[in-house]
Image (tube, rainbow, N blue to C red):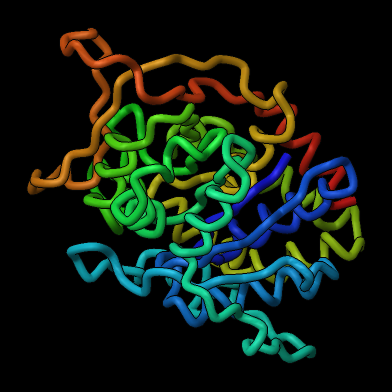
Length: 317
């Protein structure tokens, strides 16, 4: 399997990247990691990505920078900073410096186009961030979508629940126009792992506490560092209804690599609201089949919570 992973690397992207790198021994090849503004500003995104690859001894994987802001709006990373820390990685202290000069000179959007042209029908694009880079690739190259094998999106919602607004998930809320373009214009198979799907597969803090004290592995030490802000302020998140732990980007990556993680899928037609005062960035699903459009998204409806924890435990042990 050939991958391009599009990230806005905070703690959850970092764990997803670390997990994907660990799968490379079994035939997976990560052709590029492309960075976009989201959880944190673009410079920190690329720095965090390189730090993760450095930790995984995988700096051979090239890192590219793309869009530094959304298509139309300025975006708002404050919610993510509050959750993941000002650096996106738990405000942790690191002993090893990161060489940001390793960021490739080619723009991430051009990289996506070049790699898919060179590997038509072979690349799975995994998006763990606002969809600005992907929307721009679709705008710049009319063959981009047809050259992709499939796309896995972590983002959006299916029950109207938001995590940064009344009814929008962060990645779609940051750049609703990009999300709308992507769902409208992608013609390859698209799987979407939504906020609510991850929320329903959350793991209690007490179980996570037990897991943390049970292991001192290298992966666990990295996890504790990048997730420290989430654990430190758990009472604050509980007041917002986020009572338990979840790593949405990591869960999405698990869905890609292990078919038993998702118990149920549903093919639907989905679009994105860009104008609503209270619903901007919210995904609108035609549950009643009122429109003539064919389904454009495969929704992960129900995730296997026990399997997710099993994978997490094995990876961190």
